[in-house]
Length: 296
Image (cartoon, rainbow, N blue to C red):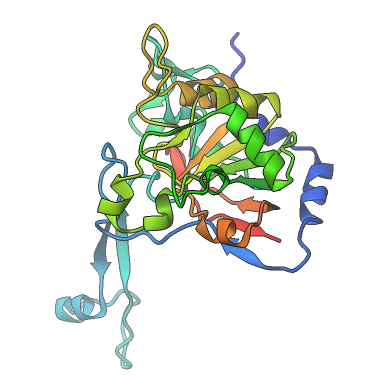
């Protein structure tokens, strides 16, 4: 009988590490790591556009002469409710284990595959309902600042040796159970799509992925829409367009976060913090929008 895993190593954080992370809070200052979401927002081109569609409005209720609460309603009480039509991967978000597949069997981390675990209502193994909460030590690594740049050039790889040098220059150590956030500067230009396009998509390469694995991180994120550098400079044979996703998410269950807003942290040179993110537990979804916090 096959043994399946629903959660990556992030589900095994020792309680003592949560206590250590909480002790990082000294001032109570919180940094939001998300930009807003709105119809027409820049997104990875393979995703559907973000839409807000009104379903109920006070004027619509009145025109239809409906009584949602039942009569009487002598004060003209109304309400508004909407549909959100969007991918879970809109804005700051985390990939569930079932987000990416590989191979002829379309498998993902934990033993999932489309033949056995993809229903008409989404994957039932490693989906967003099983995403764990994140309350742990966070580390920001800032390669463009280390290079003396506002942002990395388009398609610029960030390797493991550079991450090591950045960490040393910033005086911060990456440790087991950490969440490591890697800034490229892409969202410095948000929401100017033309300016952002000049810096799409720098990011970690396979050597950076190996560096992170060696240090025992449980999750990692960047400010770009694809996490890893694109196009990949090290596709291998047979060619793999996203080898970092395969190495981290599919092979090791290391959660990936994308489109994180890291500019304020970088300006303040905050490199160590309590990282908090609470994914939405949506059954069948392949990820979750998040509005994470870095707290110091």
